[in-house]
Length: 138
Image (cartoon, rainbow, N blue to C red; front, side):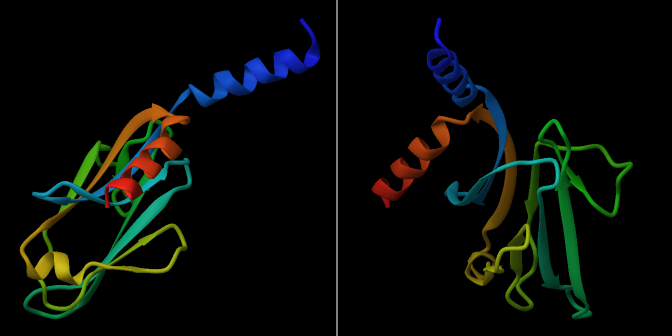
């Protein structure tokens, strides 16, 4: 077997390896707001004002090597596959994935919807296919 074929087979095999993905969805419709591959240093922040005090709150979540979600301020807490947020709409809540710009979530909470962040495993090759399918259906 030549070197080029071995490299090609290796790359194709890598594309079919499952890796963890985080999916941010709105419940009860289950529409997807964001889907990203999870790396061990991946994290997201939810910022909002507490009710009724109006104190600014920020919850930071990170991911384990196994793709589980864990609250950063509680490292001893049990990692989970899904985290849901039902934050009262005192002001517009914000979500930040890594160091990207904030994603405004105000309309979700004024309509009484719940934000859910789920982690799951899927082969890397399905990520661009899934993204293309979602843009086609919208």
